[in-house]
Length: 187
Image (cartoon, rainbow, N blue to C red; front, side, top):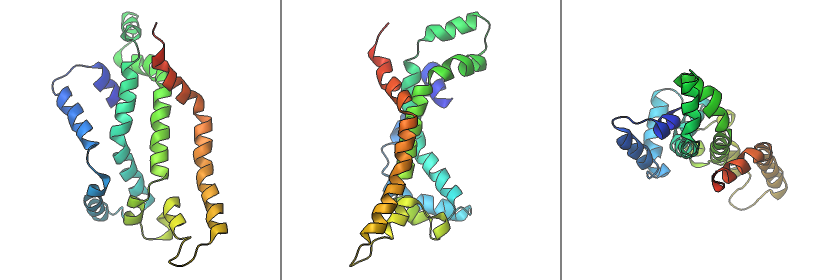
C-alpha cells in the first residue's frame, strides 16, 4: 500500500521520502552486517529463522516498493476516478480495482524477493550458528572442505536447492510475462 500511496497521492515530503527510500538502495549490504548483527542479538533474534525473515524482508523492501510503485503508475487513473464517481471509497477502490490489476507487478516483486532471499549467503552465515537455523546456501558450503569435495552429495543438494526456484517461477510465469508486456501496448 505504501507503493500505491507514493505512486498516486500528492503530500508534503513525498519527494524526500522517495529519495530516502532510493538512497537506501545505495548502501552496500556488507556495511549493514555489524548493525544488523548487533540489533538481532540485542532483541533476541540471533540464530533464529524469524530473525532472518525480518532481515530479508527489510533488505528487500525498497526494491519491492519501487517495482510495485512503477507498476501502479502504469495503471490508468481513469479507473480510480470512475470508481470514486460510482461511490467507492479509497480502500474499496484499492482492494477491488487496483490490487487485482497489480497482480503481475506483485508477482514480479515477490519472485525477485524470493530468489534474493533464497540465494542469500552472507547474512545467514553471520546471523546463524546452529544447524536448525541454517539456510540452504549456507548448508551447501559445508559440503566442501579444504582439500576435498563430495561431488555426489553436493550435486544432489544443488538439485534440491534449484527445484523450488524453478517451481515458483513456473507457477508465476504468466504474471511475470504479463508484467513485462503490460507497458508495451498503448491504448
